[in-house]
Length: 94
Image (cartoon, rainbow, N blue to C red; front, side, top):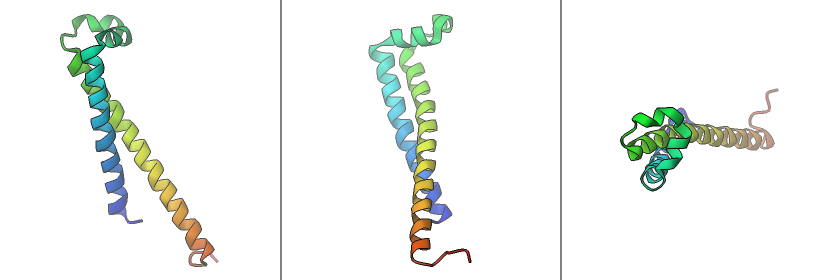
């Protein structure tokens, strides 16, 4: 796997999960604003726009999940390529 392909996987995964998280967070803020009142406790008293708060929190959480998923995909692909190469006798290390 090339470095460019690894970056593409992580960036693509991050963008996908970030957008999904922002969407889910904005929907929660629009239809269930009590969720953020409970989660944020006393800090929610100054919040005027729960849709914006939900979108922002969902975006950051989605980005972190996307980075994690992208890295897991990279590790799995590299592990599989290493096992395949070892089985074929390409990279035995001896």
